[in-house]
Image 1 (cartoon, rainbow, N blue to C red):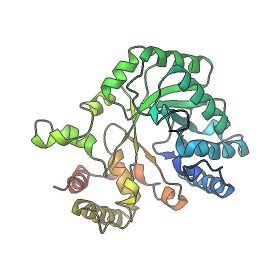
Image 2: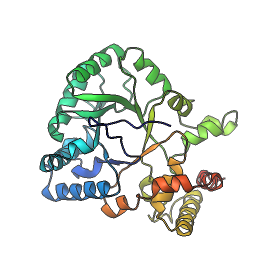
Image 3: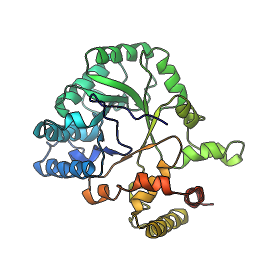
Length: 322
């Protein structure tokens, strides 16, 4: 069984993680508001109440305000840092007066980004740092130097990637001292390519699948923790109005609702349970800061254990439109 990353106190990451992108509010350059900071605190409390102890960030989320909001929470609760697993990402440069939007895995950018995240989060270290999206100009030697400095200084404990293929990981690890432990990808009933890539081998429909060949199998063999961003599909299967969506989406939402009723659980638990049933031990990163919706995810791991092969395939086949 896959072992989840441990924090500095030896506490393993929870099976669910909370994505903190919305904590900062708008993506403009306005300052973080007190109202948004309080909403963020309520979201953290809801996550902790259902056993979530892993929190996912990125330096660019709402231009740093999301990390700032979380940092205020850590400052007001000195003991909380030791109880959680804290993850952030770097490598995306948002357009400004100095440069266009771009990816940047240069040594200096990685080091500066981590220092900025630590300052905003008001902590001395990250448990995990992810490289956010592939940089065509990346040099593994330069990345290895940055990672080595961050590890030696105690600023980062583990390293990983996001939105990368098996080839990207092989390329990076050719120079890295530490193995990459995480790859975060868009996975779920609303984004089925990770399953289609397995099922559609030697089928003409497989030519339209947009997923890295063999990545699921590679990740399992190499013990890389797969994290899923967007696992709740922006609510398409859990209560959002889908009258204008495709027949597959509407039928999937109906099936999710029926299964939740039969099992006396929430629709969120069914959707996440489907994803967590996969033997790759996928870790969903839920992206809501609504306390009620966070709490609705509490039964997900239990539902993953209870879900039959028949119901897993029923949800899959309905969502794919067959």
